[in-house]
Structure formats: C-alpha cells, structure tokens
Image (cartoon, rainbow, N blue to C red):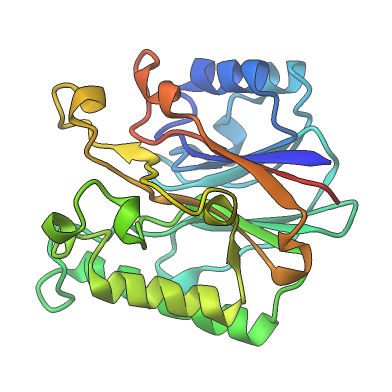
Length: 261
C-alpha cells in the first residue's frame, strides 16, 4: 500500500515549511507538486530528504510553472512531454519499482477570457488538453496514476455555483469537454469521485476572498486519476481543506488517495 498526494504549492521555496509540515503530519509515500517556480537545482531538498523523501524526479523553471515528484519509495525518471509546444515545465513522469507510472501535470490556467481569439492563453490551454488526449490515445496507458492541477472543475458539484461559473475559465463547457476527451482517451478513472461520488468538493479557494472559509467559493481543480487496471486499488481519498488556513498558504490544498498494489 502507498499513499499519493498532489498539491499546487505556488512556490516550493517560499512554502518549503508548509511542504515539510505536510510531509511530517500526513507522511504520504509520494508527493506530487505543481507550480514549484524553481529550477530543479534550487529545490530545497535537504529538509525533505531529512524527512525520508530521498527520491525526486522533477522539471523546473525559474519563477514559473515546474513540477516535482518527491518520494520515500525509489523512483525512475520516466520522461516528460512539452504539451502544445509551450516550452513550459508542466509535465513529468516517474516509475515506481512495482511498475506503476505516475504522471504529474500542471495544465495551463487559461487566463480570464474563455475565447481563444481574444485570449492566447485560453487557446494554449485547449491545445494542451487536446495533445493530452492524443497522447493518451496513442500510448494506451496501463498501471498508471495521473495527478495534478488540471485547472478544470468538471462537475457541477465541483464548483460553488455551477450557473455562475459557466462563463468563467476553469468551468466552461468547452474546457470540461476537452478534459473529458482526455480522460476518455486514457480510460482514466477519477479516484476522488469514485471514493466520494456525491456532494460538493473543492481543492482551491481564491486569494481574492476576504474570508475564503466563510465565503467558501471553491473549485475542485486538483485531481487523482488511475487507469482501469488499478483503479479498484485506489481508495481513501481526502482533500485537506484545513491546509488552506495555514500561514501564508497556497490557494490550493493537497488531495490524497491510497493504492493497495
């Protein structure tokens, strides 16, 4: 059995102490971070290694993007793809000794206007998702787990107000359709919603809210998926809402699941 967590940390160097706290209190076997905003050589590894996380596979970028997989378990680098040719560090994969491949994604946010003609970033997001779909269709992934900040809340109960957010980037029908196509291409199972099929679930709350907890205008942007051959081994999903209230927090919180493999 191993536990995997995914967390958009919004700068691993700025929030090193928060990562260390999570590793201490929750002790997941594998932690996938997005938006680390750091070159690989400047990730503060010493403290994480002292907590038992001696293995890392990462792709970094100065000041922007970046993805990393920290692990207590031995990892082999399984490569990366430059989806949509953006030149961004938004994907990395690693393979555990049991043969399970972990994909860690940071899908582009897409800007503020849900129109690719008016907003280049929105078009890049759609292209990124389309290339994910095509890659999954070509690769036919097996014994794989996919996690990350996918920057889309697909279900009506993944947002605080479905109707109010239909024209807001991250919940527009076009984005949901593109994400669904990528999910279907890899036959991915949404582990969080397999475990918690009903009710509102959020993993992100905006910094703009004066009181994020009271307003509770959240979205479920962070996901853990698995291929059908191992999906039934996934259970125990949790979203760590209290982490949003830690000092100088990320606007995302960790999402966890266990796999009996």
